[in-house]
Image (cartoon, rainbow over all chains, first blue to last red; front, side):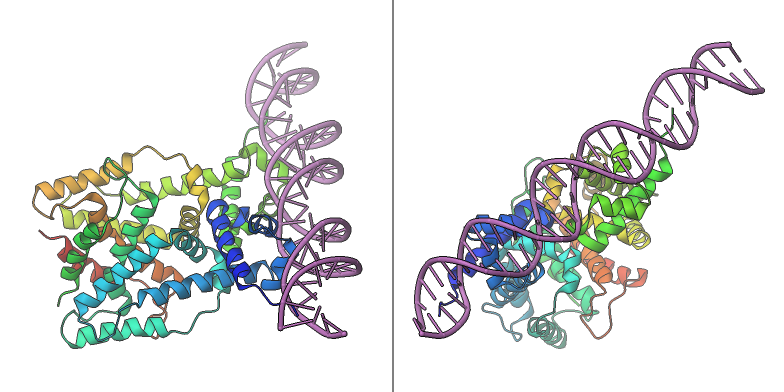
Length: 195
Length: 195
DNA sequence: CAAATATAATCGAATAATCATTCGATTAAA
DNA sequence: TTTAATCGAATGATTATTCGATTATATTTG
């Protein structure tokens, strides 16, 4: 019996993300993917049940990787400022290292496909929420509904990321995010969250 | 000579947005649109040069409407707190009144199509930036790079909108945004921006 | 004012390309 | 020897767009 080639599946996934970021979901097709990955269209169906299954697994894979990497060095018991800053730094690094994956992720999340996505175990989310509860209990931050808290704690971050990836130029020059600028936004966010 | 039917074009635009929100760009086709709008596929090409032209004009139309409505009652010379709160309220109302348009807008902005979009006159953006300059000069807020300022001033808002439209449930119940909750997020944002 | 004309809107059908998926034959490795 | 991976080709459906015929209306003419 012939074994399934893990490297081949990884190549398919990688090429799929590249194509989708370049062409969008509507420009993306199984035949184009097969050509880009250097194999026959029918081989794709060995690794994925169909097109939708491929897209959903792509999304699940990217999400899992981003969440795992965001937890590097993290603990719910970290002091609040330190823990939140670590989250910002981890996510910033991961997005910079995998910009295509992030663009794919955002494209997927804003498409109707996301409704077919089977949600993952809530481990990541509960870790984050535990972190907030500890911070409230220790008096580091004020008590707020979770959605409001996270919008304050991460909203600015993700808008900076958007500016960065779009190379947006609000002032004269195209914007490029650095860890220093990240910090410049982080300190005011702390002010917003203080009790 | 037979006149062009403005109501028909409006119906096409409306149905197109509905279909795209429901099916995504890849599920959306000219034939489906024709059927939904109750006309022949070829009639679409009277009103739009081709599929891409349709999508770009759809986007431009939605953007223009959102920006125009966001300026209702607004002036660059408004006191900072009042002006920013008006922006939040205006945008919140418009999104609640036109959720499909907003979803389409976000889907488009996160797709590669956005690169083919010819940017509009910068009137809106410069109005906003003038507003910030005035606020800095009057000492209402601290001086920050524009991108950092806007990420602080609007990042939390748009994340709340996302929670609202996704009916996200971080706590037990699905999240639904109200003007009161909006205010609850707005006050800390002011803290973040104070000098 | 009524009738004729001009013209763009509209339609249904057709075109060629591309789509997702399948199938039978072949290949490679356990 | 067995068996799943792989392939090339084929399937029928759907795609964007076009075309010639028809329709409706604004304008001009009688």
